[in-house]
Image 1 (cartoon, rainbow, N blue to C red):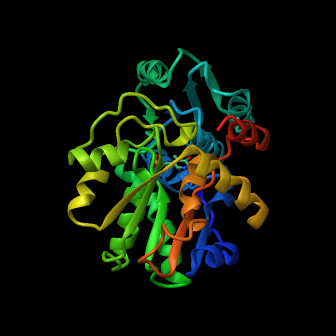
Image 2: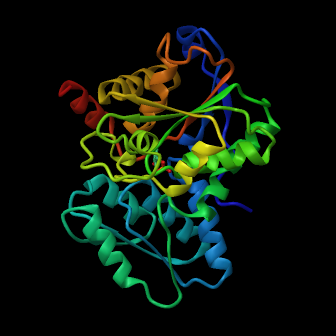
Length: 304
Ligand SMILES: *Cc1c(COP(=O)(O)O)cnc(C)c1O
């Protein structure tokens, strides 16, 4: 039994009306810990659990850490999450609610991640937030569910942070015989590490993350996401923080679900009359995210 749930797949009438084509939503915001991350993280944790892991270690104060904490609780495995001081009280609270040991260390993710690595003892499994083939195989289950329900989409729209979701969705498309379905990879300005990689034809590090969409804030994408450029059609789209935030508000009104700006970035294409031109029957991955509150989204929006 996987740790994630099978999520609903529904048409968004409001998006279909604006974009003037069918837009279907894969509602992974409804995973128990609030994002698609549970698919891959849950799979990786189950595999490590089967190999006898006694503890899971994560250095993510975001949705990946939450998924590890959730998976550990369900599997009865101890979880330690090292987060930087910048991690919000809300995120720390959510991690503690899942029963994880939370260690606060350092001013940035790099420092937290370094400490997390020094803690790895024998019997511990480190769960990476995006660069691990176990994770991609777990994420791919999302496309298996689509194959069992609506059938082949004309294109898939998703957000890109470190590229784990992108790799998982492409693995899922290819293993279902849908290798010709294009993927539209959306990032925000200030977190566009996949765009940088497409221009350089290699994973390169961007200087700084300046977007408010922190869940997209990987300075460098995983190599596999760049390798897929050679054998899968991937279009890179970059939107503004404002576009992502507007989409969050609109989506809350339309579908009564609060998602992070990281997810709003992808959703903003469904609220554009032109950005989906050339594609029909679009599958929108509603990746979710549990770390933003409505107040926070409104405060960011006012600052735009
Ligand atoms: C992690 C995450 C992403 C990006 O996923 P990657 O696998 O890092 O590309 C997008 N949206 C949300 C809500 C996330 O938690």
